[in-house]
Image (cartoon, rainbow, N blue to C red; front, side):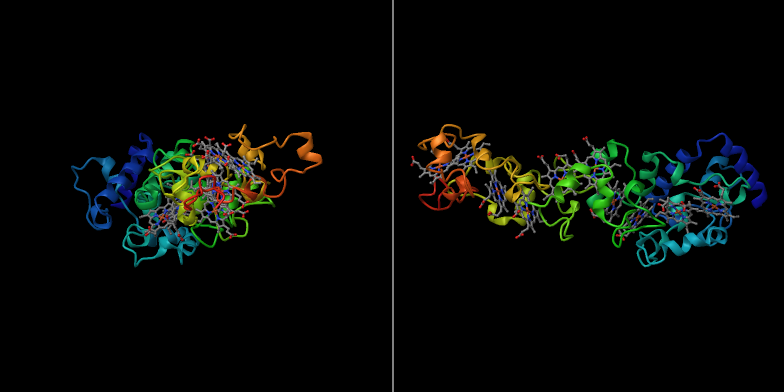
Length: 330
Ligand code: HEC
Ligand code: HEC
Ligand code: HEC
Ligand code: HEC
Ligand code: HEC
Ligand code: HEC
Ligand code: HEC
Ligand code: HEC
Ligand code: HEC
Ligand code: HEC
């Protein structure tokens, strides 16, 4: 029986784009709910009349068979979420190895050992489809059409199923930052600047405190929450959340008007040094002399040039709730 099937496999598979065909089969399998859906040759032989293609692509060999030749791969799943048989959605509880690699009886039968999904040789889109059969909900619902998807990243660009290096989330590098730095050197360099940054390099925050690398449906720049930069920042900096009696327009607009979210070499992660930060918008104020007067710089040193500069007086720059706080001085 197996022998006969084996030769059919070889005949048919030769004429098939194996990857694509078996991928759609996995998708079907997942949609129809897993283990019981596919008759395997051992348990329920396919009727003679059934198209040969289906017999090939739905024939599962079972993990026990796979590990007779690939024993190391079973060990690598132990203790990971994919090996948790108690979780009904896990590969361990469904088709084991073949939940990801696709039905493998043809691979077992074929001396050339083709007919199996080889992630190392697949296109990003094909890899992602194999994983998305299970990971298409919740925080992953935004993957398709996300920037990372469009730019050809695969799940395996950042994750490893059999040989993860991180403690959490099976990343293929020891830390999240090491994963991202391969392509986002600029942002990583900023988070590591000495003067001002949020505690990313100290490890109490990470890129994913603010971003969802799997994309988000609600906003730009793959921000993790909210539909604007401010909504994101205010989840941690709640005191900045309005409404205020006296609002400062640029603060309502976006925190990134004045702060670089990844860090900067200016105090408080300011995008520009004081007082130039303010003077990008407030050029001619009612203030007496311009701070650039020779006098103001050398003789009567202007308090607008030193220390917290404009902030020495306009302390509540994010807005004020004081009745006479219209100039953000209280
Ligand atoms: C009879 C031994 C045998 C069995 C059983 C077997 N394989 Fe293989 N497998 C091989 C050999 C030999 C290769 C190397 C040839 C190749 O790369 O095509 C291989 C290659 C692979 C590869 C590709 C490796 C790479 O370099 O990318 C994957 C994936 C794989 N097997 C998965 C499975 C799965 C899943 C099962 C169970 C359905 C299975 N194998 C059952 C012998 C076996
Ligand atoms: C959750 C999906 C998933 C499951 C379950 C899974 N694999 Fe893999 N497999 C992968 C991915 C992805 C790769 C590419 C390398 C990596 O990410 O570690 C891979 C790579 C391989 C390779 C290629 C050799 C290598 O180390 O790169 C073999 C062989 C293999 N898997 C066999 C198996 C066997 C046997 C099982 C069952 C015991 C299994 N896999 C279960 C996803 C899976
Ligand atoms: C048969 C379903 C299934 C397939 C296919 C599958 N996974 Fe999973 N995966 C799970 C389940 C179940 C969990 C546990 C978390 C959960 O319930 O969502 C999980 C967890 C994970 C985790 C988190 C691990 C951790 O320790 O936090 C990563 C990363 C992951 N999978 C990556 C992948 C990748 C990459 C692929 C494709 C190569 C893949 N998965 C294919 C079912 C699957
Ligand atoms: C750009 C790198 C990157 C890519 C590409 C990527 N991931 Fe992740 N993934 C991460 C990071 C970082 C985490 C941990 C932080 C987090 O949960 O957002 C993670 C966490 C996870 C988790 C566990 C946490 C959770 O939300 O359940 C799963 C499951 C997962 N990824 C699956 C996938 C799948 C499936 C794909 C492909 C569709 C994929 N990832 C693509 C970086 C990536
Ligand atoms: C293999 C390369 C690669 C890796 C690794 C990578 N990214 Fe990206 N990422 C890209 C590319 C390419 C873009 C698009 C950049 C552009 O358009 O300028 C992008 C865009 C982004 C964006 C902007 C999204 C948008 O919608 O504009 C964010 C945020 C981001 N990545 C975060 C991360 C994080 C966090 C990690 C680590 C978990 C990571 N990336 C890892 C390649 C990568
Ligand atoms: C405190 C929150 C926060 C953290 C932490 C953070 N980002 Fe961002 N990131 C943002 C915001 C907000 C934007 C949008 C900036 C804008 O639109 O002006 C952004 C934009 C980006 C972009 C798009 C290009 C750009 O600069 O506009 C990339 C890429 C990116 N971040 C990568 C990363 C990486 C990699 C890490 C980890 C090293 C990281 N981010 C950590 C908030 C954060
Ligand atoms: C996940 C929580 C979180 C998010 C989201 C977040 N922050 Fe922070 N932020 C922190 C923590 C923690 C600190 C350090 C606080 C401390 O040292 O007292 C900090 C510090 C700061 C500082 C002061 C830095 C310094 O050098 O003193 C600024 C400015 C700042 N954040 C702006 C922002 C902006 C702008 C955003 C949105 C792009 C944002 N934060 C989003 C947690 C967050
Ligand atoms: C008009 C420019 C401007 C905008 C817009 C702005 N900030 Fe600031 N922010 C500053 C300045 C200037 C400081 C430094 C204050 C000081 O030196 O005392 C600062 C300081 C901070 C600090 C450090 C703690 C503190 O109170 O000194 C945090 C946190 C912060 N800003 C968060 C935010 C958040 C969140 C947003 C968006 C809701 C935002 N900022 C928008 C100018 C701005
Ligand atoms: C992106 C442009 C922008 C930046 C940067 C900016 N502001 Fe403003 N600021 C405004 C706007 C717009 C108003 C509202 C003006 C109005 O209502 O006439 C305002 C109002 C004010 C007011 C109240 C004045 C009034 O007439 O109501 C003060 C005081 C002020 N800003 C100080 C500062 C200081 C100090 C800084 C630097 C930390 C700063 N601003 C940075 C745009 C900016
Ligand atoms: C010594 C305290 C002090 C310093 C330092 C200071 N201001 Fe003022 N500022 C004031 C006072 C007081 C007012 C109210 C003036 C009035 O009532 O006419 C004011 C009013 C303003 C106004 C609103 C009135 C207008 O002219 O439109 C703006 C905008 C402003 N300041 C910006 C700045 C900027 C930008 C800096 C830094 C370059 C700065 N201030 C530094 C005390 C100060």
